[in-house]
Image (cartoon, rainbow, N blue to C red; front, side, top):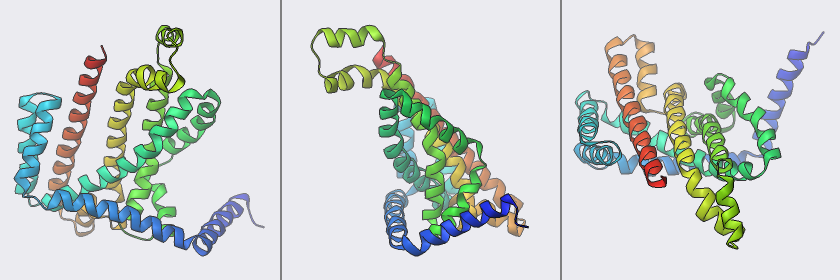
Length: 280
């Protein structure tokens, strides 16, 4: 006798087969767009000599945080190059930037709408909770079925994981607008668009930037896991090291991931701090 679990599994399999049969052209186009965006960003990061990217990261870290952090950021990226992991590091960074860009293009507008519409926000919360609760690698399976192996699969799964924090914090920022400022805008005859651009959005920017930070961190964690689907980067390096028991190489890749994480996290946190000071 067929169990309920078997029926659910069969329904999911049939659904994926139907999508492959009827929407293959759409998913092929989606793969080309995502891989094209990724290839463009990767080319921009790998074409210059490593010290150019390291210096640029150092200057950005100096602007966002302080001089000492900028110097450490540049030295950290230079150390990745000295370990022989520069191409993999830049591939990982390209995957993170691509996935974050796509995720923010979806999450920020939807978060703004949800901030204005409490019912939509309430309806989205269970979906966001489910996405964040499920193990991240579970999103790789349907992505493989629809997009095949490669960077597009890693990007699709990463985008799904990276959307919830950005969407939540964007909606939260829109709802945080002080009532007295909204009343002042109404009293001065401001239109709805003017109130959004001049009152709501400036107050929401720090929260949106916090969402960008969390989106980056979720994307970085996911692209490392996604190395098992042939996405390249440091995740693939770790996966290959596990298969071949190359402990030293896996440690090197882990160090590079830590360096990237610290640079991205501290830089975006510094940018958030600057926005908050500007808003104050």
